[in-house]
Amino acid sequence: MRFTSTKNLSRAGTGVLLIGALSFAGTAHAELSFHIGAFSDYLDDGESASNNNAVVQGGIDYSHDSGFHFGTGLSTLGDGDGQEVELYLGYGIVVGEFDFDVGYAYSYYPSLDDEDVGEIYGEVAYGPVFFGIDYTIHADDNGGDSGDITYRLGAEYEIIQTISLNGEIGYADPDASDEHSVTFWQLGLTKATDIGAFSLTYGSTDESGSQDLFVVGYSIRFAD
Image (cartoon, rainbow, N blue to C red):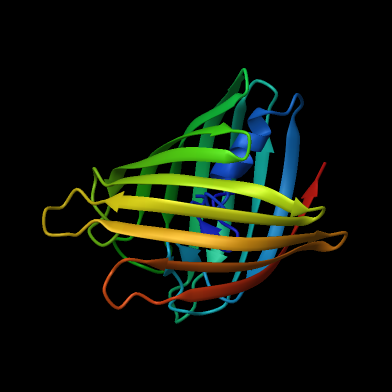
């Protein structure tokens, strides 16, 4: 998934899709997995995508030993905005110690008008460090602009057994001349347990008046 409590997810994570896709690329068998979680906010590139409302998120991911992977995810948004639904398709390969992943992700909002967006994404990971690029190829009037580019650099490191530190810094470069570029960052801790993962994430941006967001969450994943 590209999102759990964060998107780009990954996008977490990629919204997590990107990180999840890279882990799929390194496996040698097909896998179907399901995940669901609850979070105090929806952190998207350092900003709240749910108007500071708590959200429930879940999804299904499938990866094949050929390197192809696809999936779907859903997040509530709060304030009568309905849900965000994301579909993605990607291909990952391992070359030496590097993991490469490319794909397409499409997000749409059934309760909103002019808010869907389609992106091509690419990512390379070396050990715990990853670098990714998202390029918008389609966006409705209020969902951004075609040609928007976002760059990401992040890492995840296990401090002690079952406790991991993760972080990401990014730069969003809008195509529209009347919009300003934005630098964003996110930093989090995750505690893995036998009954799921507990997380605490901080995020913000360099925009004037930007909120400092602290998100707590719980998620669980099931795999075949």
